[in-house]
Length: 254
Image: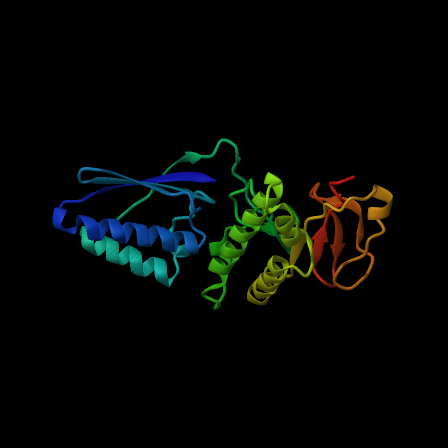
C-alpha cells in the first residue's frame, strides 16, 4: 500500500465550500472504484487543503484507471479550481511490502478479515491482492458491491472476535454456507467470474469445536463432496471444492 498527498490552494474564497464538497465527492468515487482505501483524510488550513490517501499500488491514481464517476467529479473539481489536481506518492506502508501479482492465476479468492485493509480479491496462485479497479466489467456497481460485502464481513468478524453480545451472530455469518453474508459473498464471486471469466472461490471460516481427525472428514457444505487438500493452500486453506468454488480451514477450535 502506498500513501499519496495532494495539496490544493483555493484562490477564490467564494468557492471554498463548493470545492471542499467536490473533494469529498471525488474521494468517495475513488474509494468506490477501488483506487484508494477508505481511511482518507482532508486537512484544511486557511485557503490550503491537503488530502492524504492510501492506495493499493504506486500508480493506482493514474487516470487510466478512472471510471466515469471519477472522471466526472475530477473534472468538476478541476473546473472550480481552474487548475489540475495531482497526487504525489509519499511512500509505502512499512507493514505492507510492495508486491506484484504473478498474473498467471487460474482462479481468484474472495477473502478478508477485520485486520486487513487490502483488496478482498486475491490471486489464487500467489495470494497477492488484486486492486479492484483492475476488474474490467460492464457491471458498474460490481466494485462497490464487493466493498460493501467486505465491510459487512469485517463488521461480523469484529462481533465474533470481540466475544460480546454479537459473537454468535458474527460467527454464523462468516462460517455458515447458508448465512445471509455467505450467500451475498457467493453471489459477488459469481458476478466477478462472469466479468473476468476466471473462477472466484469463497472462503468459509471454520471454528467448530472438533478434533483434527474428525474435522478432516468433513465434506463440502455445498455439494457434499470430499474437499480436503493434500497440502495447505497459502498457509490458510485446508479445504477446496472445485465444484462449488468454496474454501475453508481446519477448525481453529481444536
